[in-house]
Image (tube, rainbow, N blue to C red; front, side, top):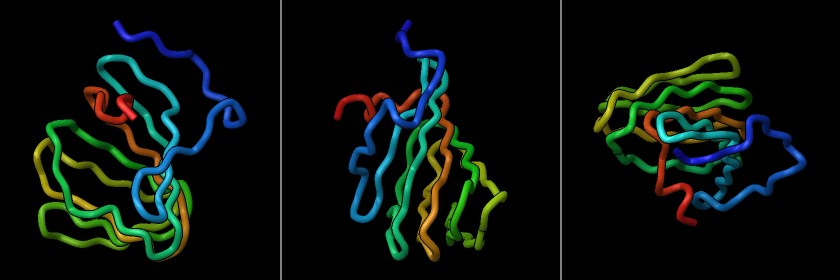
Length: 113
């Protein structure tokens, strides 16, 4: 099993690049679950992509146009969305903000960088 700290403290980790105008911090994980804090600058785009992981996301701040399987929805602070495995999805940041993404199983590709 992959070992990870039981607690996440903001000041103990650095933001890492995740695309133009996008940075992220992995807040915790094991082999079955991963939580990631993703910060977007206004206008940043999380391009359409898919993966075999289930994903649940919470809008901690800001405003986003979220696209899932060809359907768009405007989401703001307090809203959230769920993406089933292998569905095309993406995000356009309309007002700078943060998404909290949770993946099952963990995104091993996030640990490689």
